[in-house]
Image (cartoon, rainbow, N blue to C red; front, side, top):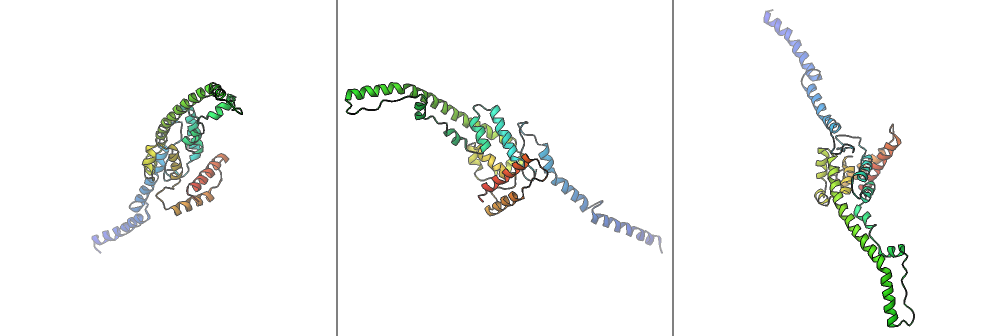
Length: 267
């Protein structure tokens, strides 16, 4: 046999071994590509862990793809506490965030009431007498007017304070909208912008709508999904909620998150 023939026989097994290595992924080919793809898939988690929000003392939020274990209840709890410390006239807004209720509705409960002021000041107005003359009626009305003067003054003062509080609340809502988005990753912000009515809610700085949307989106539920599929997913995740090795407080937060998602899905 010629020398060139021996070289071909020696090279053939090496080629076969190289092909086997390519197929198994240990050296070249699909194995390296697979590891690169896996590394790319893990990048979302790394980006989330490295993400720093605008407010360092507040937690950050990301998409479900970036982190599958996010405590939105804890985020809302800490946000409400942050408002109490760092906002002017914070009570209504902090409560609204804690309860995810419209702050303007809560503020309406503080609308001054002249009747309550009269009761508080213990003002008693004279009632008309039987067969009251015109002179007596005029005198009675003058006395009642004088008696009501402190109540009217206090009502005007409280109404002025109420209007200032309402104006400040609207400013705080705009400020809070920016803070919330500042704690969200770029991917989460993009998902939120894709939500129905985002621009309308942004124009109104409806931070409560934004928080409710974050609660859904971080768990993979968006308004672009089919409503039936959304309801199915929310219900499935609710029944899959288990404590396992989590502290009781974390389990309660997960349970409340799942419960809220079911309610938002209209199940």
